[in-house]
Amino acid sequence: MSTEKKIRVLVTGATGFLGSNILRAMAVQPGVEPVAACRRREQFDWMLQQEALAAGATFLGPFPVTGPRLEDGRVAGASLAHAQTGESVDVDARVTLLATGAATKPLQLFGVCTRPGASAMAARAYFRLPPDLADQEQSLVISYDRAICPGYGWIFPGPDNVFNIGVGVFTDSSPDASVRNLRRLFDRFLAQFPPAARISDAGEKLSDLKGAPLRMAMTGARFPVGITPRRSVRWRACRSGNAGSADRRSRCANCTSGRGAWAPWPAAAEQ
View 1: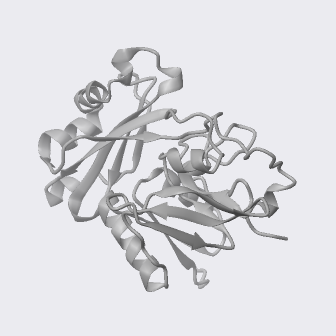
View 2: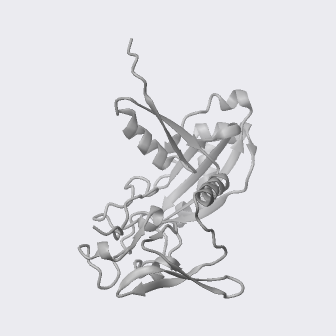
View 3: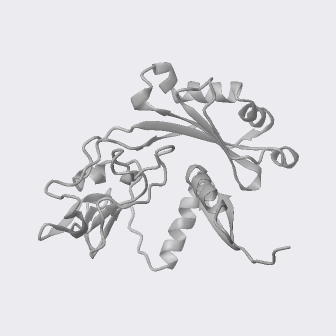
């Protein structure tokens, strides 16, 4: 029997798309035992904020960005303005990270987005099962069931016997209005996909259906005017997550889910 001690690596997030890909990749690494954890969106965001504050970050809210601060053609931070009072704040930064999710206005202000429309839409609701039934439904599910194609569905088991169930649709490839109606798609998923039906029938619904836009491999992403890939290192700004989704050549987004893109583009660090 092997006595080798494995390193436990925790993969955490608000959804299971990225986590499932990381777990699959790490599971084949010798000496590594990947463990997954999934939290509800509002809980995960709050935990992330608290950890950032504890590490020394300063939280400014509500201060939407009004544009980049430029010095000699380089991004040197961002200008912000209070949403209600209009109070302006300039933030100096050696590197500026645009982690704006699917919100495109900040990307447009920085000149790195030519298409504001979302390339996909998704919606989810939370359900809680009795403990004995929850133990039987512990699989992370991503479904391309015939009943909802060309859309997709998911079931993410979370803590306290709570399940995140949702559907999504790619707007570029789904011209049929009936497919793009997320409420109808969600109802069809609950009615015709057996695991989703079991959870919705036996469980307590904890939230209303809530939707959000997604940016997934959008061809509208681009380098700022005058910035080429060779010169982007000196631009001192980068994008992360859905904000980093670009065309297929950039390979910033997960081509299956479009979520959790971590490659900065344009690159930020100076050589």
